Each structure stands twice: as structure tokens, then as C-alpha cells.
Length: 119
Picture 1 (cartoon, rainbow, N blue to C red):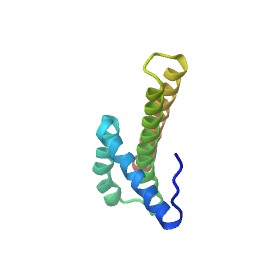
Picture 2 (cartoon, rainbow, N blue to C red):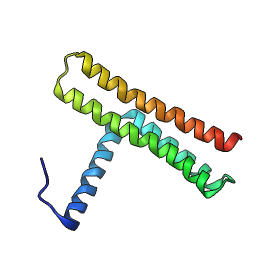
Picture 3 (tube, helix red, strand yellow):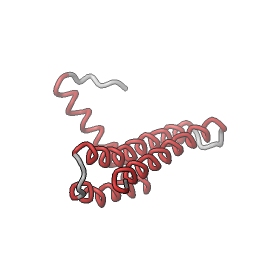
Picture 4 (cartoon, rainbow, N blue to C red):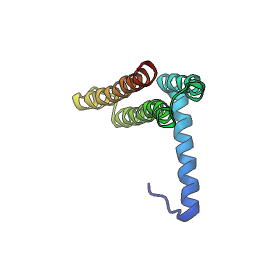
């Protein structure tokens, strides 16, 4: 369903729907809640560690990327579940690929943190 809103009104509704999506994800997805907690715990570390601004940005972005990919993975899972509850090879593949994307983003974040803080 496409919105009829334009201009500032469209921006308002886009932000509203985005916020609703984030709240829905936090309510239904334990992994997303855990990743947000990790972000909240590591944010002070990012601010306190003695690194350059660019490295600080990479530390932050690496964790935010995990959250973004988790949201996309959740969206994939919700759409697949909406289509039907019965097992289908392609549905399983879509969910597995989304999960693999989250795993890759987690490994990437760990690598960024190790490279910046350990070397």
C-alpha cells in the first residue's frame, strides 16, 4: 500500500513507520534486543578508548551494521512466515541466508574491534 503523503508529511509518516518497525522488532526478536544491549554497553567504550575519530566511527558503524542486518533478517523471516507456515526449501533458504548475513556482520564487527583495539 503506497502512502498518499508528500513533502514534510511523507517524512513524518516515514519516521513514524520506521519507529513502529523498530519497536515491533524489539518486542518480538530476542537477538535484536541482545544486539541493542551490546551496542549500549560498547558505546561508552567507543567514547572512552584512545583512538582516532575515523577508528571511533568504524567501531560504532560495525555494531550498528549488525543491528541493521538483524532488522533486515527479521523482515525476511516475517515475510516468509506470512506466505505460509508449511516448510518449503526456498523459504528455508531465504531464512538461512538472512541468518548468514547476520553472522557475517557479527564476525566483521569482531574483526574491526580486534584490528583497532589489539593492533
